[in-house]
Amino acid sequence: MLLIVFFVLILIVFLVFISLKYAEKKQYTFVLNNSIALKNLKKLNDIYSFYTINNFDSNYVYDNENYFDIISCEDYLIYILNEKQDSIKKEIKCIEFNEKKYKNYYDEILKIKKFGAYQNKTKFNKESLINIEKNFFIKTLKNL
Image 1 (cartoon, helix red, strand yellow):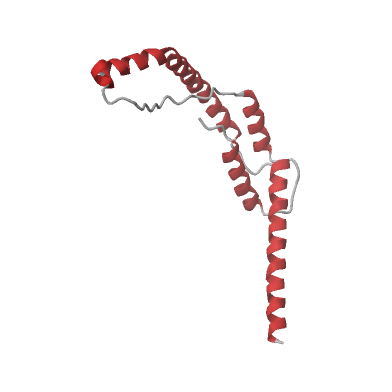
Image 2 (tube, one colour):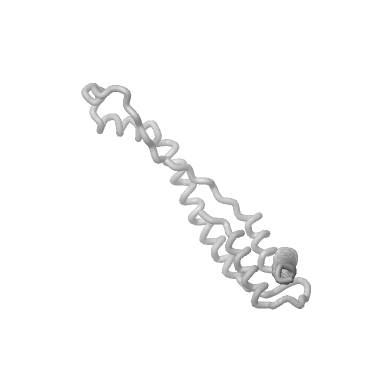
């Protein structure tokens, strides 16, 4: 008898957990489909595109311990920098472009950061929806 009660309790806990997850999923779906702020952010992300910035961290391994008897370390570094100079200058221009464009993007984001406005009415807890909306908003922002 005690075993049956134990399994019934486990079943009840399991069903409550499943129903809570289902309700949460419905809230997430509602926010994704009806949030005006998220739709405006998506439009903004479609308008603004940024360059991907390459990393110039380098690692060099020398197979000859007498290598720097032939050429000094300073000369070698100057050679490497001269070799990468054009690509570094190009990346700097891309960074400057991104910086200017990101300021405009940020100003536009501040204009649409009004949470809690939805296309359809709902019975869901508004505070819970706003928290879900903020999380989606942060995940959708373009990060540089």
